[in-house]
Amino acid sequence: MVCVGETMAALAPEPTASLDTGDALRLAVAGAESNVAMYLADLGISAAWLSALGDDPFGRRVRTTVAAANVDVSGVRSDPHRPTGLLVKEPGPTGTRVHYYRRGSAASALGPDVLDDPRFGSAALVHLTGVTPALSPSCGALVERALATPPADRRHAISFDVNHRPALWPDRTAAATVLRGLADRADIVFVGLDEARHLWGADLDAGGVRALLPRPRLLVVKDGGRDATAFGDGPEVTVPAPRTEVVEPVGAGDAFAAGFLAGLLRGGPLTSALRLGHITAGSALGVTGDHGPLPDAATVGRLLGLTDGAWAARA
Image (cartoon, rainbow, N blue to C red; front, side):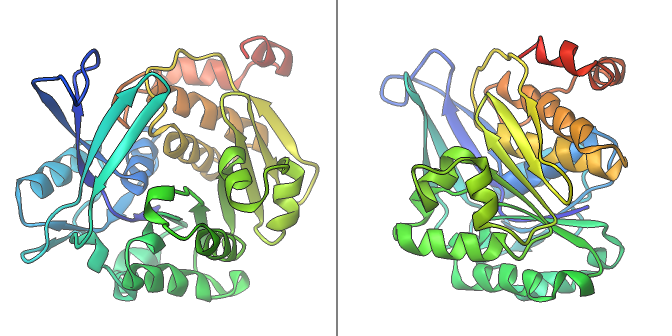
C-alpha cells in the first residue's frame, strides 16, 4: 500500500496540564496518511508513505518516527526552502482542539508529479484523505489526478477517507462539494456519520450517506463509538464497536481505516475487516498520541474468531 499526505510535528502539554498553565510540551508526530501506513505495517502489510518534509529537526523527527514503524519512507522528499508543518494540541473537558501551523509547509507544495513515483507501479492500494486537497491548489491537483482514471482502468484501488477538518476549509460549501466529488470517485471510502451530517445534511443516516455516494465499490460509515457499516455489492454489514476506555480520540479514524484495509488485503469477509478496524482503532483511543500498540497477534485472532453474539456482548 502507498499512503500520500502531510505529516507534522505535534506538540501537546502533559496529560494533566493545559497550554495556558503547563510548563512543558511533549513532541510527537501526527498525520492521517502516515498513521494509516504505520498501522498497516503493524498488521503485517507492506506500506510506503510519500510526502515532503522540511530539511529541519522536526522533519527529521517525523521521518525517523514513521520509519521506525517499518514504513518505507525512502520516497519522502526533503525541502530545503519550506518548513515541516506543525500542530499544537489543546486538550479540554469537551475534547481536544487542534491548532495548525502548516501554511507554506513542505508538504503543501506537493503536486501531481508525486504520482509518478515508481512505488505506485506495484501498489495494490493507494490511500488518500480529504486533508490533502485543503492544503493548496497543487495538493488539490494531486488528488484530482489520482482519481481522474476511471476505476475500471486503474492499476490499483484507491481508498479515500473524507477526514473533514473544518479549520482547513473556511468555506463550508466548498468543502461539501469538493469532498463529495472526490469521495464518489474512489473505490473504497471512509466517512464518519458526524462529519457527513456536518457536510451534507444533519438528518443523514448511514443509508442516506450511501445514497449520496453511490459509486464507490465499498463505503464505510463510522458512527463514533457505536458501530461501523460497510456498503458493498451485497447487503450492508454493521459491526458494533467494542467498549473501549478513551484517552484521546485523535487518530482513531486513521487506525480504523488501516485495520479495515488490512482485513480486505487479507481476503477476509467484510465482518472481519470491520472488526479489525475496531480493534485497531482501540489502539489509538487508548493513548494520547496518534499511534498506539496493537494487541498481540493471538488476541487479535481470538477477537476476529468470536461469534457475532460474543462480539456484540463486548459492545
